[in-house]
Image (cartoon, rainbow over all chains, first blue to last red; front, top):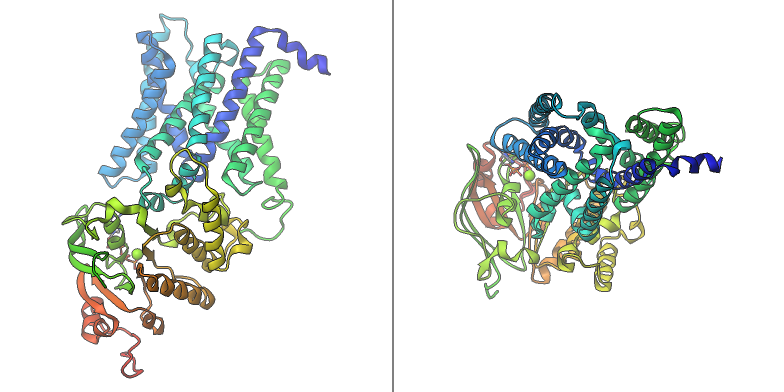
Length: 281
Length: 251
Ligand SMILES: Nc1ncnc2c1ncn2[C@@H]1O[C@H](COP(=O)(O)OP(=O)(O)OP(=O)(O)O)[C@@H](O)[C@H]1O
Ligand SMILES: [Mg+2]
């Protein structure tokens, strides 16, 4: 049994991909908590789809694709905000318009360049974790360090701001900076996750572990810590399942995370479908 | 009253796109007085509080507190928003919310001090919620939620207190606690402004009233403002209110 678990680790690619999967599992769970408590799950989806043209353009220019993706992600949120604040169109519609446009542009650009290059649209859409290089590991680790540092340093301010924006503004907290920090956190996390799971499935890593933890605990930091645990379990088990059964790794990770959610949904001591029989409002 | 620490509003206006929510508001808020802002739905009561704090852009001269703009002294203000604006399913406990009152004073990158812990505890005890400090906020009654918010504002050590509709959906017990504390705050020389809906008997708890409907209808001592013609102008019709001369109600 133990041998079976150690066996895959003799391969360098497996070591690298496991490290990246675990790091991504950690930061997605933490940042996903902020998305969830602000009911911004859709924004995560919007940004993740919007990074695609940034990836493509960075690739064409030979620039760092992390940076290209990040700029596109931030640009999309700026567009969403302009539409939302300068017209009567609500946020959800603004997101729908912007992210589908960015996504379409991204697919178009990648399709054009993939003819002459050895790149594959599928790797952008669904990730290619087995192809991570040492450079990718390093970049992911740097992003994770920055993300966790921001969350720890601004923890109490972000707690206040995400709970009560008006109240936070009223005591004179720098709400624009806090809002921008959240955008940066979301953008960096999504970009770091692209290799592992791709644009389509990253939302699951952001939301599912956070939501699972939300069913079990009642404070934000507890939710983050437990979510990190679920993220790590999902990443490691997903990678092994994908190795032994020769399945795509992104979907395997997502399915493990979803299974954990279903367990919590059914058996949570306070909110479980099977453990709490009185009607929820 | 020496008048150095009054809040002075001069010709304040607020526009939401094309909608004129408030115009030409001029009034003073005195320390030591318990003041209520009243008026019909949509009169601009919440807008007035937000505009004073700079939470929404306003037209006109900046609102002054003492000899400086109020917006430059937000650390001296405690603002409690309308309870319905808050997502009460947020993963936080009573304690977490009260400690938010200490975030600004604590400063960036710092941990809460021993003093902050003590102040939060005292604030919770004052509103009678200390035993519930570890309870998730989603499991509180409306009155308890309001008391947690009051405790958060007390923990701030402010001098100016703005409460938006604190009495909506709270029971008698909480109402009594709120009024007791509002009075204590005013007696301690603070400025206390409460947006209120109810023109019934509880209105007699206030010293001064601000009657609004997009513009200032009347301001001053309670008895002066609570006149039938003022209320008629504000509400565009006859309204029931608690009249102190005779216990009569207009129909
Ligand atoms: N963010 C906003 N955007 C556009 N219009 C707004 C906004 N907030 C308030 N208004 C409008 O401004 C007017 C005043 O609103 P405000 O919330 O200040 O009234 P209020 O006196 O607090 O009412 P209530 O008793 O219902 O709380 C209303 O007509 C309202 O529709
Ligand atoms: Mg209001």
